[in-house]
Image 1 (cartoon, rainbow, N blue to C red):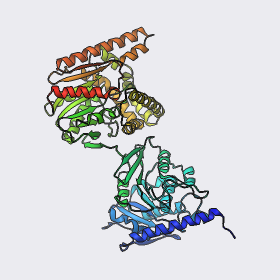
Image 2: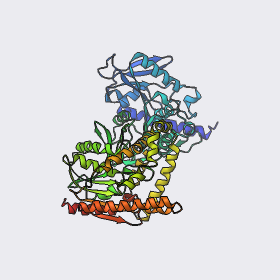
Image 3: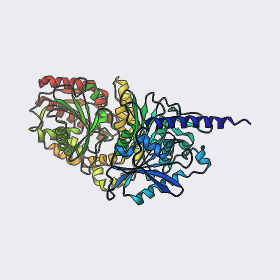
Length: 602
């Protein structure tokens, strides 16, 4: 009697998987098994490994490690030895009831025989918690091959039980991909060889056991867990590429092993170590290349450092707002790489912006003090400041307070705030006065997500505008970096930080207006005519148009005076957008080249 072709394909696939997984276990099963406790749980069992120097009165993290098809808990322990990698974990190695786990595809032996592996997993966690002290919220899962497919089932259907999970050598079944609906987010790591012949990296078309690709799987899981839209792509080395998403609290990562096959371990990649590192950093978003977090007593500050081998004073880029008050180092995605060809350049994000931590006390004035702490940590004592828009407040106060502590060689203002009466009256009107009056009610309103949709719409418009600016002026932009920083503005803490800074803006301006012009070091000012577009839009409102014209005139006069008083340059840009760093980065570099020559800097 002929077997149906689907059954034959499924059996062949299973046999290949069994052979591959068993051979992988045999290859790594050279060390004697550690002392494992066989634990009975009803008619099921699991093996428990306690950390070295286990103490019954100490609290531990819990890790469940799921074996491949045809494997066993003991075999998974021989493969991974998780308990040897970190003394903070109790590790459970469960045995499947059937030859494989009920992975959620509703297509395999375990499903047909009714193995309730989800319930077994929940019961196992409870059983271990009753026997040992497990740190609340510190339960993890890892799985290899078909055990990895089952861990995806856990991520889709039992995410509330875990802080993070890891999947090795498994894409995702078509069926689970279509049904996955996690009730809450959980961090997910995937590790997969691009040349896997058993559970292919690029997926597999099959009527019973179809697979989507691993890149599609991590994108799907990220989306199901409310991740921000743009993935970070990083080459970690010649053999490992990372695709990373995050939602501000959890992250979702795929480590693609170039030419890697169906293995637990890969050349240049210690799977156990990397999984445990992922678990330890599950709440920390992956940083783009050149980025770091600098910790001070006031918080963690996102710093992008480039051109670190270049000599001379450091250039420090300080971001200010566009018309939506979005203010972070995304604006330097074209400028910083250009400057780093010649200079040592840091862009430093204020608390509440980009990857910096946040605070209830946020302002441009406060950032002057924070900047001093960050520069101390960076061991940079000689600096040239580049201040875009309202960050002129931070730069001016930094000079006022720290000119004895740091050698501030020169400054470059780009469309600075103008500390004169008419300009101040415009800055301190709407929306700043509205935010100040409504901030106590606005913060919980933002926390409920009420402005997330409008923020998303604004960002879409901004992105299109920036792309047009760059294309019109043939500007090279690091779009990967721009996207990573821009999308952070969607997060609730960043929305709240923006509101807090706008509410503090009136007081910032009042303090700024008390400071005299700088005369002891050269200060150049780039003055775009971005106000012209607003003046033209107000043509039918003569009073508003007149106010905007006076603002433009007052700004140009003040900027020219500041440059003249300090022996700097006044650079007027015609037909220019306010986002000069993205539209005309070369002009900023020329201005800095001039300043370095003027101050006789190396």
